[in-house]
View 1 (cartoon, helix red, strand yellow):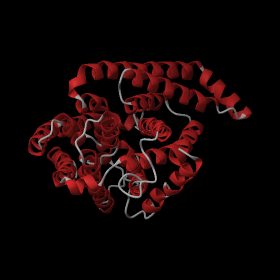
View 2 (spheres, helix red, strand yellow):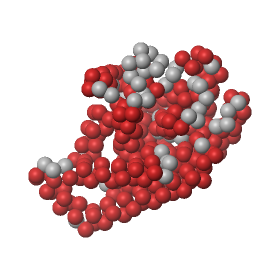
View 3 (cartoon, helix red, strand yellow):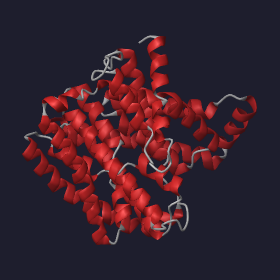
View 4 (cartoon, one colour):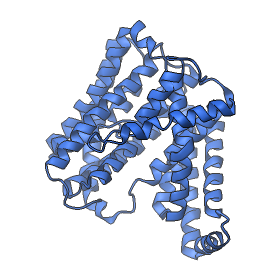
Length: 380
């Protein structure tokens, strides 16, 4: 990869904020970045080569940071979530059970062997999409508080389950690796909490701020990359490593200065680069050559929406049920893993992205309906 190509990647990454600029649309920034990668990658002009080792490594780096930031944004320390945890957990379980049956049905119809994967995709909820939407619209109240633990539980469970579901032939190896990576996340949490309670973290923060050393950022990146290296060594997706580290940081409480630094590094450079790289590796033309995959993508998206709408039986408002169907991190991770390991049939990876886009469209509708319904009592 050259500096010219890197400049182009950074330039076209601006398509994300431009597309997301109209607030009434509530579109996630990554849509524009994915479209830019599709236009310049395999499907479009072929200028960007997703198989370039440097480009792929930078994409993996961005992937780890995107999942780290997503995990750190899960509000695990918010005391208002505890009373709503039971309701949110029950709704997540209902969606998961229904998605398991729907995944088996879709795999049988499509003639693939990825029923567990489809189930995980339809059961997932993307905290990276839903939490910013909730914040930007000022949604609040008891119903929204019940939505947040549902999203957090579904997101975390599906991220852990994805490595097992995407390649069942190596499920045992993936399970062992997932346990080890989660255990590493627990160790990170214990160490961070110890440093916080002893005051050492505060001392380092004071020195770093006065001397402008950015020590906390350096330590955060070192820990993240170490856990990611463990995940790679154990043949587990770096998605789980990033999310586990992010949850550990969220459990202790991320300093604002570090949060801003990581946000700038991720959203300003490596995050957009990852989504452009992902789009560049998609072959959208396969959908035209394999119409069944187009139908599969639409079915996955609509299936996810249908599964989440069933939470209305547990008194979830329809707008919030639609919002909870938003998928992003899990399908994106599935495409990245599947393409790297050659697990997908032609067009199947693009179908997963299509399904995610359908679910995001439904979530945008749900978010606007929730705002119009007056679910704005308090901002979580």
